[in-house]
Amino acid sequence: MATGEKPYRVYRGGRVKGKVPLDRPQKGPVRSAREPREPKIRRPRRRWSWKRRIGIGLIVLLVVATVWGIAGYLSFRSGVDKANGRLDPSVTPALAKQNGLLLSKPTTMLLLGRDHENTDQRVGLNHSDSIMVLRTDPSRHRLVYLSIPRDLRVPIPGHGEDRINATFPLGGAALTIRTIEDLTGLEINHVMIVDFRSFKSLIDNIGGVDVNVPAPILSNKFDCPYKASRCARWPGYRFHKGLQHMNGQRALVYSRIRENQLNPSDSDITRGLRQQAVMRAVMAKLLGAGTVVKLPFNGHSLLQPLTTDLSAWQFVQLGWVLKRAGQKNALHCRLGGTATSIGGASVIVGGEENRSVVQMVTGRAAPQPPPPGSGQYGPGCVVGNRQFR
Image (tube, rainbow, N blue to C red; front, side):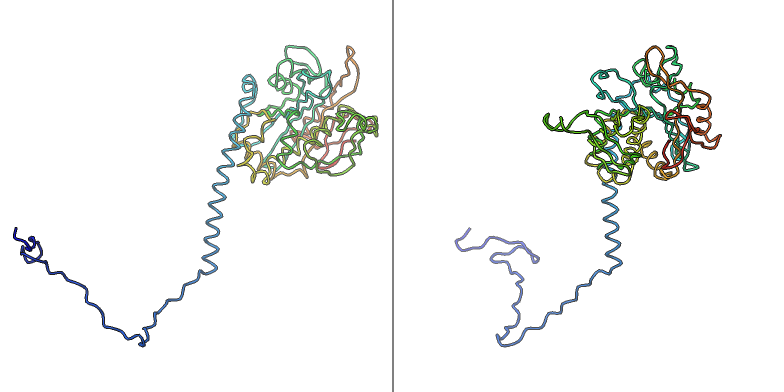
């Protein structure tokens, strides 16, 4: 190739030597510095209407609520799965099949409260200190609570007659279920066992509970929270009459009180009623809307004190049923009888009045309070916030 020659280029016209002619942009006319520029036309920004803002806000809120609800449900379901895993496999065959949804069909649930730390002598006995049956009727928006004294003497299948709280150490919740079904004729569909040892953390996690204290209480000196020097002068725990908000420690103390220095007639019956009042308050709070907001954070740990056969979806249904029915017109019933001593043990021997109470629970008879003169163990039913006399 000769010096100075350009290589061949290819363009529209073919292949030629030298530079390829290029189309170069032409420079615009030279503008004088004094000549004003043409004004730029700016289109005004179109602001969102309030309807559009509300619509987008609702969509964002709906998305957040959906994600929050799914996360909360999954966390809660994890806790329910663990609660199901703690249930003895022998319990499920003892339960009557639930016909239909809890939202639309009546169900009967056994609530058992266990407390191993009431006294040093009773640690490890594994007794059920609180026995209560909850019966729901969604079609009537009706709740019925049936309290069964732990010292009630009953026939225990395969073990003769004994106090009903002996069924748990003898055969677990399955034997308790069969005993109560034979005693009352009620079919038990579900069971929930509450361990009072870990109840404190549950109550704190749900923000405390509101409990109506029927009468002033000054307890004996147990579990003194102070140093030894102050405990010597400390009179005991005090509870004033009326509705009170209790944290976990306060509610646990209230449910464990065995002696009321202001009322010598207080007994295990009244103590059992206190435990059941705390359990009802916890269930209402646990299944309430306020707890749902916290589920993504503590849903897996809320159910640590509970052992149950209920699924997560059944828990949701039960919460809705309890909310719809409310506690204002709930029926509170209890079995009872005459206090006596058999074989050196204090027991309560029931009579025909207990059969009448079961009729009130099932709605076949009008609710009636304990008969006059029946004392603190008298069987009967009261409505709403009325107290047993």
